[in-house]
Amino acid sequence: MASTLVSSTPKLLSHSSIPKLSIHRNLVAPAVVSALPEKFSTNRSFVNSLLVLCASVALSVSFFVTDVDSASAFVVKTPRKLQSDELATVRLFQENTPSVVYITNLAVRQDAFTLDVLEVPQGSGSGFVWDTQGHIVTNYHVIRGASDLKVTLADQTAYDAKVIGFDQDKDVAVLRIDAPKDKLRPIPIGVSADLLVGQKVYAIGNPFGLDHTLTTGVISGLRREISSAATGRPIQDVIQTDAAINPGNSGGPLLDSSGNLIGINTAIYSPSGASSGVGFSIPVDTVSGIVDQLVKFGKVTRPILGIKFAPDQSVEQLGVSGVLVLDAPPNGPAGKAGLQSTKRDAYGRLILGDIITSINGKKVSNGSDLYRILDQCKVGDKVIIEVLRGDHLEKVPVVLEPKPDES
Image (cartoon, rainbow, N blue to C red; front, side, top):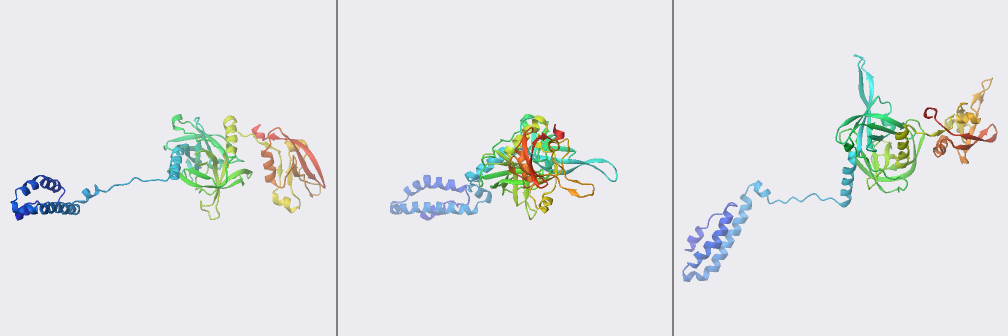
């Protein structure tokens, strides 16, 4: 009987046989065991143990003989886990990407063979949505020399752009596109006056028009000064960052950890020519005032003296410190006040003009100092200019005026 019981146990080679084994053991085995002769009653516990052992072996074998697809059902895939700072960075990128645009600079060219006039891309850059009226802010050098401009939004829809105004001295320009308001996502405007060295910053751009990119870093310096690519006039209080600014990122936003705009990425200093050098951004406090004037008036009213001055190296060769006046047109502010220009006498000898040494008591050593002081003044202000005329100092009052093309 025992041999018959063992031989009648089904062979367990698949998952389908496992439930049959369980039913057979639980329902049939007790009946069979109870039907055993009395002399085998002492072996009941042995038979129960044998059945349990067979079931365990069959279950183990089934894991090896089953197919790969069935085995994969037992694999538990854990979801990707990110740290809190990573989640914050991902969220910042996703929330601000719709505000960043791609700008294509098109120039008119004539084909040498067919004489057809074509529009060819001569440059590109990034920008960002300023308001729901369709104003786009970018760098002036991104749009310089363009005959037509195209702005591509994050959803890859492209629009022709019109130049509202620009400030060459600060490398800022404002465009406008006729896009539905529901497609325009203005970027949150922050403050740059309270920035600290070491705080995290994020640069978003659209370098090649394919997709947006994000680079991170920290503020590595404040109150830096760079020169405008268009006019050479100094741009003050510039933010220095080690966040990589790739080619085509010019005009894109620099954000703080809250996702607020704190600057416009405008330049990179890299001795190797790569995009791994030191980046510079125009602070948002400077940008906001310029954009407001460009949107309202289409121009920036900045005071001027109305002079042309010599290069700083020429003045240094003379052994003096200051700004040498080469020309002061009589219809300009300096000319009206009586500043003297550099000229030649009847024998061709050079007679130096006035050398500006200070304005309102602030020392002027070079052209950058002159621009820096004028940036703090307004049109209509009366300033006292101290000049070296010949071998003596004189003080000349001058009323500042706007540029002729801005009046």
